[in-house]
Image (cartoon, rainbow, N blue to C red; front, side, top):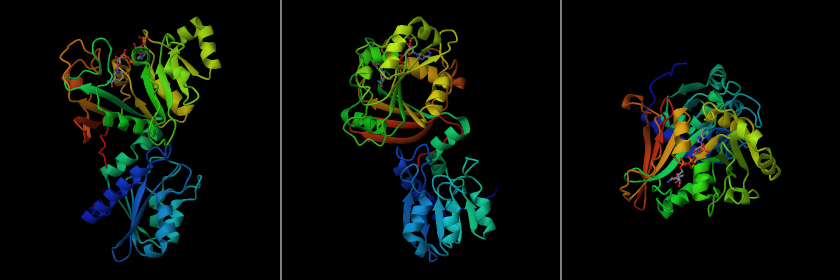
Length: 381
Ligand SMILES: NC(=O)c1ccc[n+]([C@@H]2O[C@H](COP(=O)([O-])OP(=O)(O)OC[C@H]3O[C@@H](n4cnc5c(N)ncnc54)[C@H](OP(=O)(O)O)[C@@H]3O)[C@@H](O)[C@H]2O)c1
């Protein structure tokens, strides 16, 4: 489906603006895509912008048309994602665009969902000029949705805090605190926006984390998830003492689930979702855990807060989509300190996982680096 002509600078500017607006839906719209749009009237004057605000609520373009429809006749609408054609929880957006008498529609990327796609053809058949721009920020905005629709897996964000010399904990396992207070607040904000927070038994034993979002606005309550092959989680673990605040899944090996049946029943009776997984040479395929989180718990986003055991397993299976790395202004100076990844995920530089820098932020003296891992790489709006 070719683009009619190269996008103008104004087209790109408006799509950038729509993509920035769409980000406001993060943590509110999933499993739907984040979508933003901007309307311009027949004289080229920008009349407003809108975004998809909540899953099940009206789509971005419908909100825009409801607010500014009278000024959009013969105008242009810029949308980060192809407008839908289907009756889901809301009526098709293509109908709203046609009824509003909009003359031109500029789209940042096509809808990967076969149920909802076809908007371009439908609008063109109604005589509306439609331009599809391959717009990286629009693709990035819908990357979580696109990934889940095309792979069935949630989007995995691997977060860790490291010293400048690349250690996430001292050799003793002590890691509190490497990053500063403002960085940690950002992590809590992110915890309040994702569907699941994943860690490993190593971190539970070392840090006894709660993994809830504290002192920030919750957009959703994340399920805590622990990879604990031998069901070693202590009965007094903070994760078990806080089941009234957020649900918990524990992934263990099938062998441990049958060997420790009483322990498993205790956990299940307490309300824990215990997921036995097959092992291959002692290792559980983490893709099965992600399929479970997506299929059973409807998770679109997973934030990983774990040590090298889990991070290396995820990296070895190619399951990390994004890395959020806090670099703290300190040098540990101990080669036996704990690195973010270990083992032999890649044997040579040629095999190393390529990353793409999406953004750099400063929080006091910490740096937050955000890298995309997915292929093809995506840019941040
Ligand atoms: N600075 C930071 O951002 C940060 C964040 C989190 C943690 N940490 C630090 O990291 C350290 C803990 O590291 P860690 O590697 O021990 O902890 P971890 O990654 O939380 O857990 C590792 C454990 O998970 C299990 N596991 C992981 N992948 C598996 C798979 N595919 N199949 C089966 N089991 C799997 C293994 O358990 P078994 O051993 O039972 O086989 C492994 O030992 C602590 O010192 C903690 O403070 C630092």
